[in-house]
Image 1 (cartoon, rainbow, N blue to C red):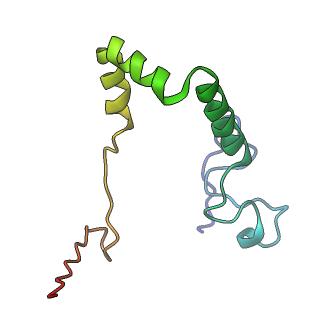
Image 2 (cartoon, helix red, strand yellow; image 1 turned 180 degrees about the vertical axis):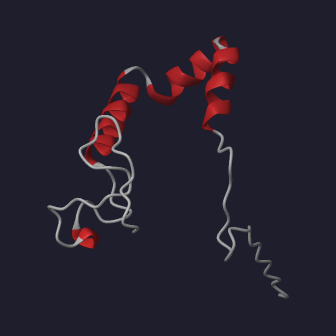
Length: 101
């Protein structure tokens, strides 16, 4: 990091890019990469319980049939806008296996 400090962000204690001086080893602070947020997991579980409480798949299917425009609007927002594959440069890799039985 350069000797110049980035300007402090509004509402944040530390400047952008600055390290927290209270953390001795930044690699050991916070959640490990990939660890789900407990609040998010709890909220998702609550949504699943409410979904079952209002009729589950059957009720959702009926609603979707009755409100097709709203259903497609929601469905379109759930489609990823950017796909990254598992290749070295993010490309998509297709493996074809031929079974000669």
